[in-house]
Image 1 (cartoon, rainbow, N blue to C red):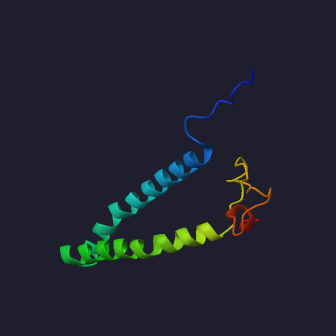
Image 2: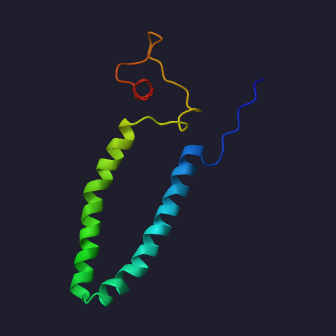
Image 3: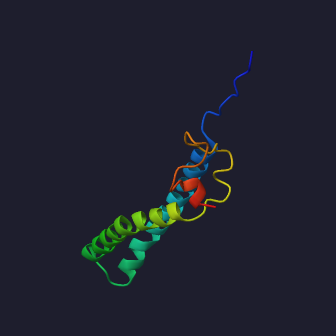
Length: 103
């Protein structure tokens, strides 16, 4: 009888992404705590604060997909080391396989 390899509760790549998102969120909220008083100190009112926050969200809406596209097209060093490479029926990799393109 073969013993089945025990899988972790959370895969390593998901854990890395989750932790990086938590750290990013912590830094993002720290900036927001100081931005509003700074704008008020410069003479800005509620409308200016709202406009700046809205522009930040609008910029994120456009730049997050661009960053995701760039991340998808760049090499993934170390993240895919534990992943088995899929093969097609001929024993080779299918054309345009991201595992081949990342090397």
